[in-house]
Picture 1 (cartoon, helix red, strand yellow):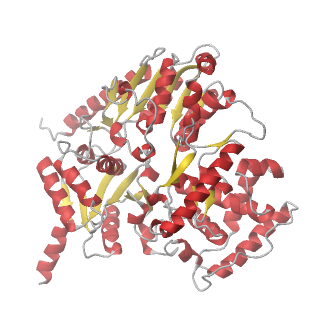
Picture 2 (tube, helix red, strand yellow; picture 1 turned 90 degrees about the horizontal axis):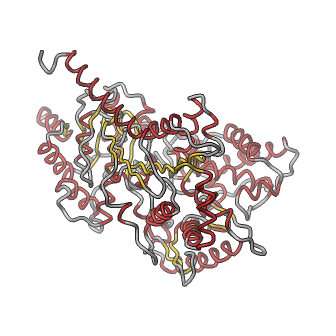
Picture 3 (cartoon, helix red, strand yellow; picture 1 turned 60 degrees about the vertical axis):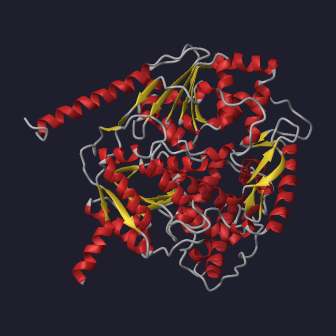
Length: 621
């Protein structure tokens, strides 16, 4: 028999899949013990979430105990709950178990039960500051600022704007930023005095309580009684503060299992403020893992080999074992120099079409929203005016390419627009407003879906769209016997433009939409698609980040890298590993040549479309 013999190939993949299944079983059965952290690394497509669910199903907790399954997105939590239900074990998604985000776990089990009540202060957690109307102004929010401790135990002092998060008009307007910063200082103090926490403040309070001997003992006693172990999925997304909380949980004698992939750590920006207390324990950041999953059920071996060139760790190359393992589609390099967007998007679409990849499975990703093809994603954040916010939410929720995070924010904006139309300008977060008006979350959800269905098409002129939207919202209020507070349609300064134009989206019938979905890499983390196009921006005179990224990729891990460049490589790694069978890069000619040389040296198959263009020029000449 030759290596090409089908029976030999079938036997080889069967052995590899048996090895992959054995590695997963080892993680399912891995023992944890009080006061110890077990770390497992899992490559992209390793089936780690499925393995975590299998552990939850197969390894029962003690009598009247549960297990805490902690992740960093609500999507992951919903997936785990769904799989428990699908396996006929819905009780595993209920008390005494916990399935949810890291923030929710900290709030429910480390903070809320131990916070002392204070006059006029009701403690409440916000998923992000922008959920509170009083934490937003002129398109910015308190999320766009970093705060310091200011001598206290919580970061609520001395706001500093995070320039790249602010609306564009503030980035070069120093006077405008100063006014916005003064507002941020007052707004944070006011909301903190009312008992609102989010993000950094949530972690600061948790660390403060865990440092108090009396409360620490109570927290430990309750946790050990309730949970047999705590499993943290996507543990590479832990910030420095998160890791310190994890280490404190270890000191409370909690058994801990952390599952993640350091090469997918792309949230370094969360550590903008230097810690004033002890640093991250080395046992959580630099020791070798206790177990590894290196079999990739998602991608082709060609894509696995490409991804290995992007690794910043010393993890071995992944082994493809999934349905696409034997496919040999080369990496596609698309030149963008001197070409229109539609041309290189067309190349990607044509290649996907040849592989019979449906439009819904064609994903375009980039590090930043500004790099994505115009018209596919709309603006990153909703506008500040009421009409713009309503159109933006409608456009996002009707876009097949919107990321999960984009959609979640759009749902919030649309629900807020409904409440504002009915009850007037809100000054409290949604849950507080609902309780005040006697409306349940389910009722609001049903109304939201009905409103979205009945709102007009976005190719209508914006002023006409505003009047039609006003009629829809008023009619929904009438069905509930409400007299809406907003009596007139929202004013529009761009009457001559179609509604979709004022929020940055492309035309609803635009040929760009044929590529399928588009998102930032952070927005599709944990997602996958048959065909993925990664867009790398061209270098510009005042910004060398793209060139630094390409040099770091081509020169390999021996090169000393800045923190920003190292994280940019990890972002690129996450982007590349979303692909199942076709991976393409759109980049300028100079960078394309460097990547082509790297892939040649590393023996990774690729197609350089510059060569096709040059051949066409020769033929036409």
